[in-house]
Amino acid sequence: MAVHHRLIGRAARLVWRVTKPRTIGVRAVLLEQHDLIALVRHTYTEAWSLPGGGVKKGESVEAALLQELKEEVAVVDPQIERVLGVYHSRREAKDDHIVNLPLARFQTLHVIFRRQDPMEVAEPRWFPLDQVPASTSAATARRIAEYRSGATELGAW
Image (tube, rainbow, N blue to C red; front, side, top):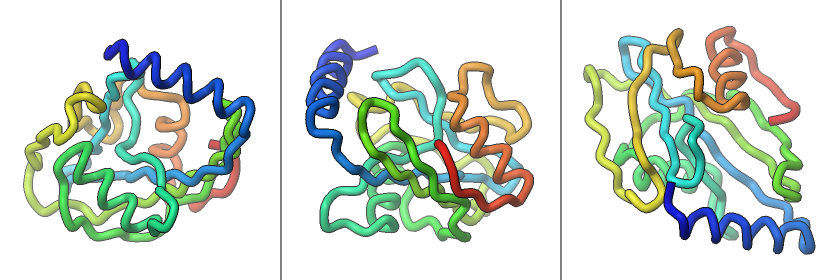
């Protein structure tokens, strides 16, 4: 895990405790046609999670998602299927809202990932949708289960 990302994260959490910012994030359920799901392991955590990130001021949810996918897994021009859910998180002293969007399945077997930003992404990988690793974050596991059940959700991240 990158030491500077840990330090930046700690500093950010201190600022957030004071400022309590409202933030918006996006995550993607990125699937390949043979039921493989894309997960990433960031340099600042050991858990696997859905690709995504924060929405910058003046940026749309769609534009943010497309930018994050390009940066994290080098996927460009995916088709968004629908909104899977909108969630709320009070972790890290933020008032965070996360929009989760499933993407149309890729028509190729095993799109090859390239880490565009190796300082942020330690590893991107495909996993069978029904065999995600035990080290997958709890929120990611819930989002995958919701996707598999066809549910559209509102609630806690």
